[in-house]
Image (cartoon, rainbow, N blue to C red; front, side, top):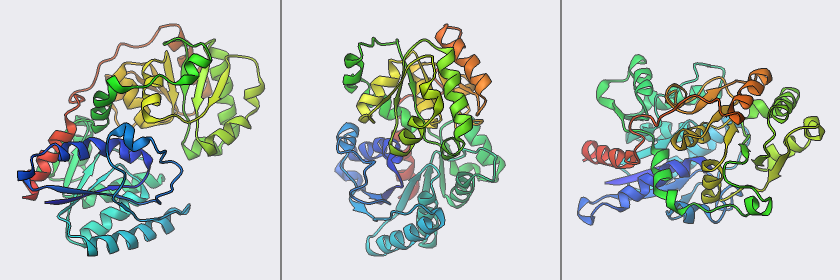
Length: 364
């Protein structure tokens, strides 16, 4: 069986790494081969040299070389390049993850070629059709032959939208496989020692969502709210665009808890940073999921979450873009007034095994 694993952007590699390792762990007699295809370029600056070493997987076998800001143009270019790839390489199944425009493009081409399509992190919804990613999710799930979900809420969404029960498999959160696999390999970032910070004596702040970055006045108010509500230092390992916006905020000149813009970290360094923090403030669903696994208080700057379990039983709290509510939750966090939390069902580090076994059962 020839399986093509498709990645559209850096975060996808973190979720597909366990799948690649699970396939490699199979005995040769199972006759399974996998190819990792990346939509972007080989010199993509977001793919730091240590990423694949940290994840313990090889770099992509194929780079489609697509680089485009306009999502419609990107979709078309990925469709063209991926169609060319599939026409030249025998493939039985394509595995895609999450909800990017490039992921949707790969899904469309896969089904036009009449191949088996499996979607990891299926059944996630914001229920806001004005969001491009929501459209991507609907299209990908609608086309997929196999929908791998992380929790019962995602199963429910997929079923309500008409997915046949036989297509939906609750395998758990594959992101957690990586966390469990790499937990003993974490690397304490040098910046903590350079700043004299002990574990549990700092907050972590991450920022990437375009809507947040675009509304600078509201973002300014939210940063000011964090600084007023906490005496702990806040470490912000932001990448280029977010870092530029961050440095231009007036709130960074005001009195309050110190914000420290630090260089982006390797995967293993960042894992240590968040797992040993007092708390996390983020707009990333992946970071919120990792926080729930570590039972670290997490405030999400969004009105919805892809995995509602992080809110229902986990450590996550949604504040949207409300600076007043953000300030209230930061005060609760630093004063140890956080809700009790647990690790959701099937976040046990064996999701990839379930995914690969299902692919083998259905694909053969």
